[in-house]
Length: 281
Image 1 (cartoon, one colour):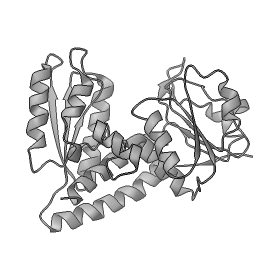
Image 2 (tube, rainbow, N blue to C red):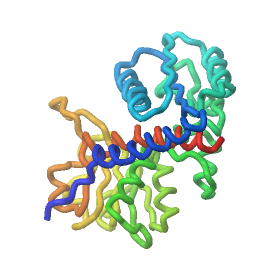
Image 3 (cartoon, one colour):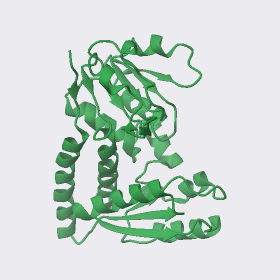
């Protein structure tokens, strides 16, 4: 058996077409959905991510503002900019690109963002809303993973889902989203004693630890759905995920590639969150 590929590029294209239509409907009412992206420092990776987010906004009818600051920007000055954006009626979503320089408390900055504009879904209020099943903004990467599962018509009710990773950005919210769809969820991490024993029970595996080949073919039940959130470089410098793609695709029922899987979905869900922030007005 060779797994079917869940194509994140193709699904993103479909979803972004809907974003453009909804943005046009808002524009007809005099509202242009606006996203402010704040970049502190000159990390090459962060600059690429930010450039992709800005371009996605422009391509799909959203207004975007990029604010770039030197790595020496003080925490107080960054907080002041966030507060100003909170009060800017033209801005519906605020994204502060992580990581921030070491002298800035990232969590303090995230908590300064108005929950109504927290389109990254990282604010404690957003996490709490997800926890109790109330409306709020879902973190973009796990939200994208859920859209990928929905795109193949996968019914999670009663299925065993294993999430490898427990970060606040992916692992924990991913587990909660799966739980909301009535999956039985196991979270694995660096202290898990026997990862293979857990993953072999899984109908769905989400790998999100940032390490090449965490999941290999012998760890996957035949027919399982495998979602690879990882974005790494192997010893040869080639882009790869957390999953041994070539091996696992011969066992799994569905699999996401890297690149072209979860990555495009993350930015698409950012657009959707920003659009929803504008629509809630």
